[in-house]
Length: 178
Image 1 (tube, rainbow, N blue to C red):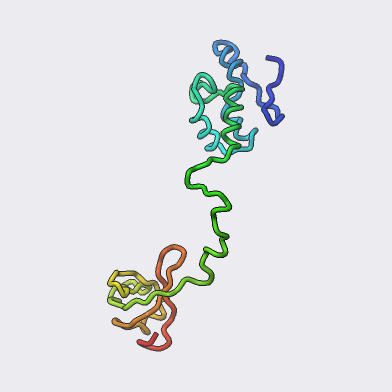
Image 2 (image 1 turned 180 degrees about the vertical axis):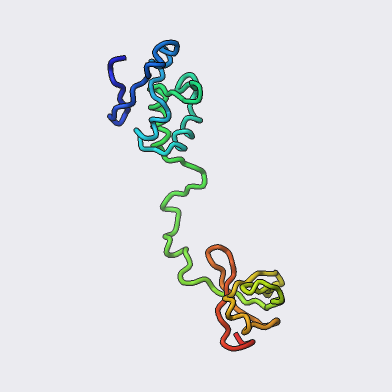
């Protein structure tokens, strides 16, 4: 009990057991000296990653639950560090040689505008126009409220889709003319 416990990276761990633990749970404190609460700070991994690693370990071999806290063994700590440091390989991951460079596959410049026909603008929200595209699908197009008098029902406008998925349009050149 007098020797300090060290983690695999060489840093000193917290005292494995407190004075309250020395009586009934002495064997648990010796076999499972590390508290999970302290591991996140000492290892430098987020607490949710440590919890996820614990779910892949074997209870009573790598960790035990004591009241509302978890204690880890040295074997459990070594296994968890292997899990945490190893990148997860999924079937969707492709070899870097199989993928094309990003600049060739990614579109460049602003997104192309789509054409819409205004179908309704008779409602209280001054920032919104109800429109239909060429296929007949409905869409909501957002405008600046000061531009509203320039729009007319039946007018064909162009709108671009923003990063949030909303359609937005520019100011018309003149009343009824986009």
